[in-house]
Length: 218
Image (tube, rainbow, N blue to C red; front, side, top):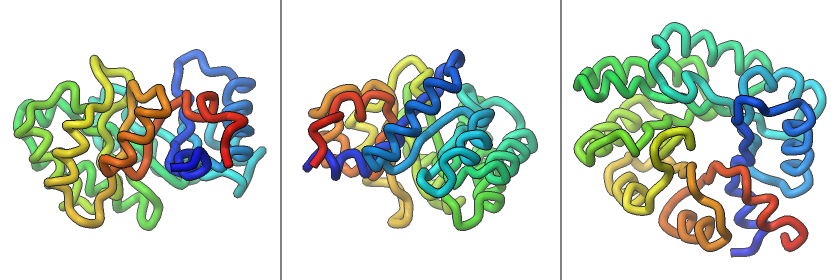
């Protein structure tokens, strides 16, 4: 793949707690220059970024991040606000406790609720694979498919581990045909980017791709 092709699959990301406006603005400027798929930024920055960059950028933000254990009504309110502020893509964190308690009905209900709010915009469902058994991962592939989520996403990047290739292969086997895959967490080299995209990922969330490929894209 060319660098330009790779960058077209990148959600250029900055979700650190101490992210400054200067750092966010720099991230967005890079995203415009290098034509990344989106920028993924904290909810509090969505509106000011939208006001400055407008349609130059596809804005992605996070909901229920990073632990996922806020209640569905709160996630719904976060989602509605983010969309009103200019977000086009929402990366939600599932209620992992409900998975562990085998309350899959609640997980399905929450994903369905947020997808209803998102509508024809994009909902990515973060399942945080580092906390899940293989059986739970397979079940979540089914739930994301049932709820008509647009992507299943491996990780927040804030858990005990990030994306793993074996999980991409597992997702590819069990998700429905309309569900795409996003990998995030620990993907830091050009080889990593190529390998995960070749394995079936449509998006990769990372803060390092632009710096890695900067000046070489063609």
